[in-house]
Image 1: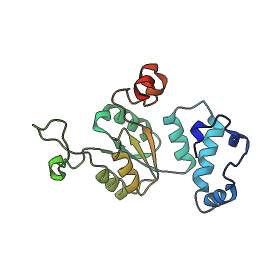
Image 2: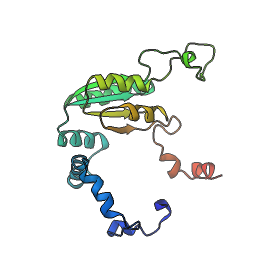
Image 3: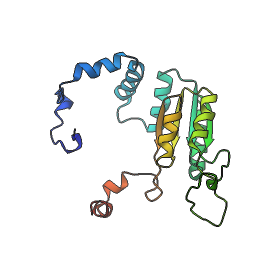
Image 4: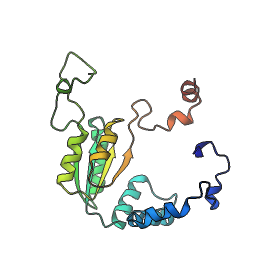
Length: 189
């Protein structure tokens, strides 16, 4: 599949390029229909009206979620604090910082930013474990490093969505590179 290169996108109007529609539909019948219904409801009711934060709240209410987990990067602690304040108006919220447990990078022979000082490693398995113990209904990623987000998602027992994608250069807006001619030229070399 190379959908990103397709100029027609006839699937938007019902074309089945792979001719496996029925097989795929069966996957939704096997237990994902509640998420699909809630997601479609939010899209249909609030299309182009709500921010992602508002959509997370509406989706979580549609799913009858009560406990929300936040796995956040320490570099986004102020943003995480503000997001937690918003979510606390609607849900019980548990938040876990990436440096939880203060495990030394040296314990796992990990590269350090500054080799002359102590450096705690990011701990996505710890974040997932702590939120699993709280039996959260939904976990939200706020700026975890690439790879750490994957580990967190893999080990979370609750469904996971990403609210913020880390991009230290583009103020956490990875699409900025696509919108900028300078970065397009740089990345396409």
